[in-house]
Image (cartoon, rainbow, N blue to C red):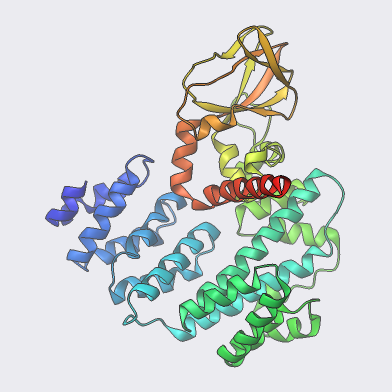
Length: 421
């Protein structure tokens, strides 16, 4: 595929676009498409058409912004700015990241101020809307807790998106430094960042951002900030049922699924895959997320990415005495016990027993060394298995999974260091 890009073989654009659907080929295809577009800017129009084609899988379409981020041409910027209005959250996030790369790497490119300012208002309005709805939602039970967590993560993503957009209009480095100060959790850094933003931003941008950062939430400032943003923010929601139904109708498939799972009485086709059992499996993907969030190594992974992990996990049944894997086997999967129990042993010595909701073999996802323990079912047992190869494909697709795992490892290292002092 690299040769296609080097030769400038434009006739192969369609073939390269098709390769974006293959986990092992998409990186090479994306690189070749970027090389072609750099040689022939007319290719950008073909990439734009693919990006706009809702018949294509969002995962494949998400590769187009990544390719355009490496094509420093005004058409690349214009295509991506037009696609900011996409309703798919992950695709929108990729567009934002790619615009940021073009902005920081090529200062001569022009970003449409009116369009981006409008998107700042929309993201701020969605942040405020989620904060309002959060006060009306159920609080009891695992389903409610998952929804609350998903809303918090979505709010954080909305706030990050506001700053990414502002970085297209103001000095990007200054904006991102301020964002990290705001998110640092340190009172002095946060106060300094707010003061800096008060001086950096102008007009409606200043009003919106300072309203978002107020602690406690400034309800009046919020109301003023979203005045006139349109029907999306005009709905008067006053009850738990209305809040759940509103969220359940969301264009964000994962957030909608969480709201329906927590009691929302609506149908949403885009959320259905998270709520529907497949094949002979007993758990829906969202039920798997409830379990995966308690696996220590995944504790810091956002719930929408846990949903991606759930989608590649498989339920496997073993009879009492069945081996799951042996000592010195190649590491190929992580397991989570759903029912029954698993003996982890070295030779004849039992090292530990994993019962329901316990995970084992986690480091097989990262370590190439042979397994040091064997695992076998002590009784009829059902486990959830995440295959290493599929996990690695997923890591290549979204860096947030790796970031969550790194945060978990960093937290554990800090805890060890504190105990050693």
